[in-house]
Image (tube, rainbow, N blue to C red; front, side, top):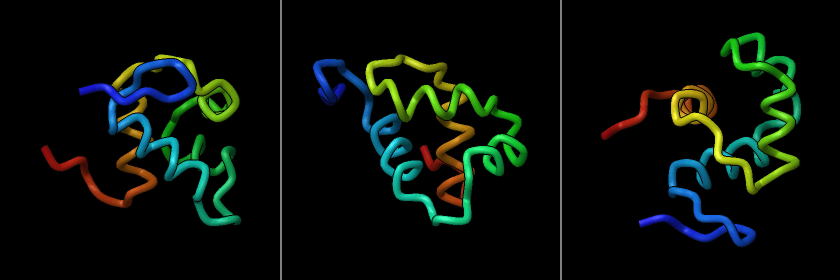
Amino acid sequence: MPIESNGTHHCALYLDTIRLLKNRPQPLTLKKISEDTGLPAPWLFSILAQPDLSPSVDRVVKLYEYLKGSPLAL
């Protein structure tokens, strides 16, 4: 069941990924995440600045797994 965030419905995976991104260790910059994952730095900035975005699930999973340090368990 989707969870509401700022008037927009998002799944728990998206919300947890944003939480991990916001609470990442200080030395872990968006540039470093971009370099390590291949995700575009402007996209990373966008999902932090615009919580109403509905990004691709593939990108969210890739970011989640990177920040979590392990594959997504289904």
